[in-house]
Length: 74
Image 1: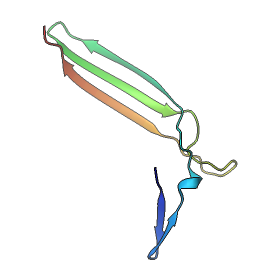
Image 2 (image 1 turned 90 degrees about the horizontal axis):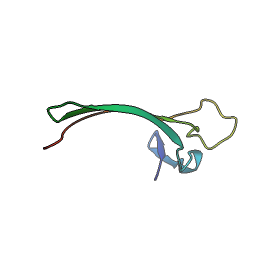
Image 3 (image 1 turned 45 degrees about the horizontal axis):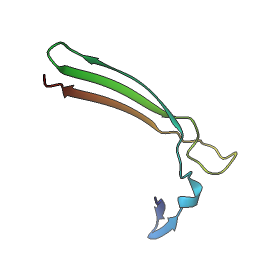
Image 4 (image 1 turned 180 degrees about the vertical axis):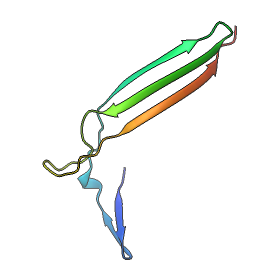
């Protein structure tokens, strides 16, 4: 939504340097036990760089690791 860079009491809007959409892929699994307990894990990774400027180094990618725990009532 917004991005700013601060340095020596100066604030610069850098929103245009980043992509507004992140294309990502996810892989995960979960297991439901006989007693209703459910455990899961999932990993998301960016396919495209978050930097909006071609040829600029370094490239930045998002990576998210999620864990979940739940219970199914019978």
